[in-house]
Length: 516
Image 1 (cartoon, rainbow, N blue to C red):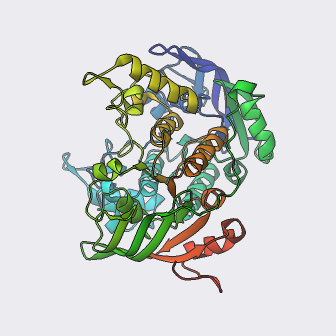
Image 2: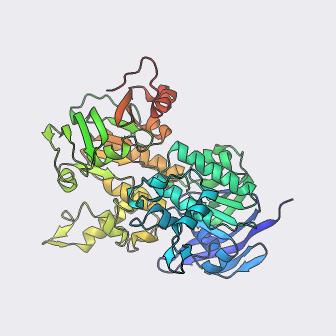
Image 3: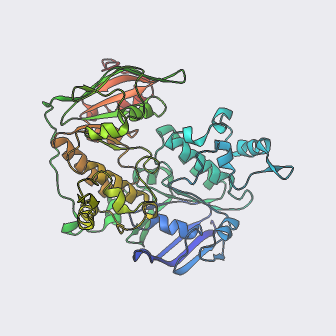
């Protein structure tokens, strides 16, 4: 029988700046060698509780002990000394440094007591990640995809695990932003860490992941731990435990979901579009049109053109050849701000780097596209601002005070701020990337309805996602990118899920076109 590694007893945490009781007498017990999933709606207290265990937040009450030793509140160094290591939902990295420098940041092996000993660092790294190529280790982190940054963060956590005794590895949304192959690697890491005797806790919003990797699952609701179950509990029962019985006023208003007739006019048109940078072809002869009222999904394994399509549609990449038209106007060389003035609304993959000002308040982020409309006599009108921001807060269930800086919010609430800002009103072209990252299933359902509602109002919608299920559920057509080309188009995505998955790997089924 395994020894208890982690005990959490009646822990509470209230944030004084907004009065929110984030964790309310939560209790938890995890054995060495156990894999525990933590689930709950946005704002349920999952990340806050994990940060208390890791010592990066101080609890107001309760006890946390590791291996029988009590952890003093807010003692991150003490938690590390007891073997607690956490990989955060938003990785704490320096994008100006190389991957190798980030992996050992703050714990660099030294040569002559001064210089970063890269040879020793690589030798240590080979023990946990023998397949990482030198070209990736030498790359600046800012050049990596979001999924690759997440994998670097997890590798950095593994380097800090105690080698000769059980430790506790905490992973907050570890598969967010990852490709299917990267997600498989995450689960291999989780299972390998548990086999080595460590306890592993991972937070997830993707309920199928619970049965895939965990032994047990704990449900948090309203800051409380409401139950711990075997991981093979079916997702319907698990979701019921997460939400309880919602009050009538909490249920989102229904939006018609019937398939829309696509009789609208073409709004977006790409013709023979190619993008090249530094001698490398990022997109090759892409042809695509999207009509008003239509949702077109773009999917593929990352580094095969998905990032370039996002950059092109957002105005951050100019085509080398071909034509990019919006409402019949050629916009090849327009800036992001110029495209926005023509009706583009954009939810980026990297929500913190491109999608938000994390030092600004929730309210300031919500009104970013409406500042001119909220002015009176050339000045922002505080009454108009408060009314507008409060209406979005209520409509999208943003669980945070409007005056707080955005960085204090959970990942799910940050995503809701960005989504509400971009979906508000009547966008002409909506480019939305990985919309469900960090969202619980109920909020995800609300966002799906709002995207469909935007299409019903006449927006042309492009959904960029590496999640096959997401594009299959939402899109009227799905295009798959592979090796910088559109390798297949699927007009009946629900019946073509298997073929879409194969196309992502470069396999085109018989009878399917290679390009649209």
